Length: 364
Image 1 (cartoon, rainbow, N blue to C red):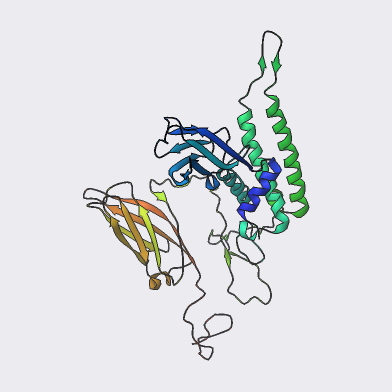
Image 2 (tube, rainbow, N blue to C red):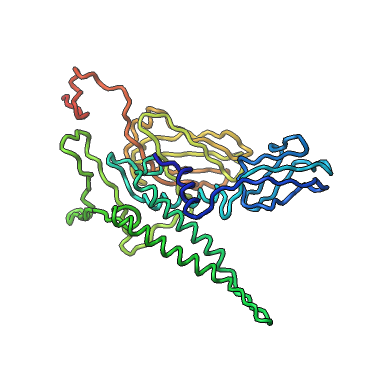
């Protein structure tokens, strides 16, 4: 099973940026900040001593610049000793952002054989190297952006320093790596250049509505058909603008649900109301969300649904959060609710008239 840490290590190997250990010693002065001659550094494994006393927990490390900031000024004349690891290009945090984004792009809209969304945890072993290659390409682009600001230097005595050569070399390396990544993806039908299979959607002439599309199933698969929800084009129109922030709720049928909301204002003299409906103008309320203020001054509130309420919520529905002040009422949040189907629940015994192997009711 792949891990993000393992992919980061592989990207470092491709970049030629392995960790290197260092030991730095210097006498303490009347200063609180000290700049290491090494950067970027790995702050999580760094140890700092002043004399024979370890002060690692009392020092803040700026990993990208290699600057140490002590909570208190060290005793002047004492020897500061720093033991740690440094890199050539990126910190672990920076390379983590790059690698994580590369994996998400490499696995975009992909599912495994069981219909589960693919991520780092179920990335096939054969795709670890291509995913690391894409991370390497994105890291090289970052280095190329930095090198693009360098300009050639020419002095009157004839000395010429072609600093822009570094940018050209990086772009050549990027093109070679992109070709390598594309060749692997085409051979394995993975990544950004894979071939997808789609089903054309039909629109009913009598209702002007899409004909539903369902996921194909194996012949011995007795689960209910799973509908596929595809993006709907605007057909040249413009989406309806909204001043309310878009926020979707995802929960499981038959489970208690709670989420915290942080408002950027004091909630004194404010009331909240939230409902779930099948569609925005539906006359029937699917569920009323309980809104509780947990901290008036800091603007903190919680939205809760009981297990009995989530058991009745359909697969997709709409919700919004309405805030009322002494002078105005407005919609603060709006969005959709996605209710995943429950598996563990109280079911009738096999001898009941309401039981069937497929899960569909068979009673009168």
